[in-house]
Image (cartoon, rainbow, N blue to C red; front, side):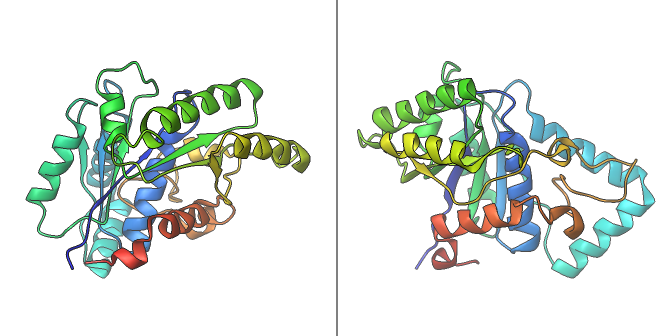
Length: 259
């Protein structure tokens, strides 16, 4: 049976919630560690943060002997290439994803989309409707939470419940969790989320500066990169591996099968 490529977006209308960082970290973990065939369509125009991050990662490998050797050894041992990162716009994102699929010798398991953080940008609603799954980061800040819940509720009512588009699931997850915050606060928020008919994931991500640091020649320890998986020591405690595994369960990737 032919495998279906899944379209997935980390999406929120609140800026600074880490959707771009989580997209890169999850894509790299699934591709370089778990062995899934991944692509990224960066349609967060005009920033195109992931597209430019890939360019910077590539330039660093060219000029830095240590990373050049590390990349050569990794790609040779894994027998794969780097996952493609396509620059696009919300209006053309699905079309560009389909072009990636047509031009790839190997079928993709997942194509991740990095979208603008507002529904007012042209084409965003249409592209969101084409997603199979949407994952939305949320924090315990009251204003961020209210904004995110309004966003998720709107998607749920206008697209999912109305049966418009392809969306099979909308899942929220806690991001930037402060370990000093009391559990009862999250329990109260989760009760409110469930009352709205929304789903919250089991895995949460801690508030850590490592999420905001790209690959750099100043350090040999890699966490966030489009060309490498995260260093095991830095991955520990980040919960990115746990989040990626939970996403695999939701997407039923093991049932979908790797090519």
